[in-house]
Length: 155
Image (cartoon, rainbow, N blue to C red; front, side, top):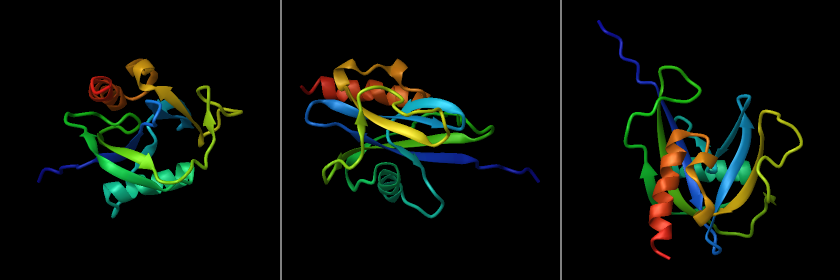
C-alpha cells in the first residue's frame, strides 16, 4: 500500500496599513536566518486562522487586533522554505490595531543588538516605496504585488 504524506505548513499573516499609507514589516532573525516578512506566524493544530493571527499579534507585539477581511491565500504550489517535502500555505488578512501601539516601531531594518534567534523589530514602510525585493519569502513577494495593485490604484 502506498503511503501518502500530507505535510503542510500553514502560516497566517496580518497586513497592517496605517493612515499614512505605510505597511508594517517585521524584521526577524529566526532559524539562523535574517528575514523580512509581514507580521504573523505558524498555525497550531486545533487553531483557526483568525485565532492564529490574533495569538501571533499578542505574542509578537502584545497587541489586540481586528481582522478586517481576507486578502489572499496561496493559490499555487509553494515548497516550504525550511522543511523538505512540505508544502506551504500562507493566508493573509487585512488587519488593524484596536488600541494604541504598545511595541517599538523602528526606523531601520533589523533594529536589534545582535543576530540571535528570536530577535525581531517592526517598521513602517510607505506602500508606494515597498518593493518585492525587500521581502524574504516568495509568497510575501507576490502579496507585495497584490498590495500595490489594490492600494496604489485606489488612492
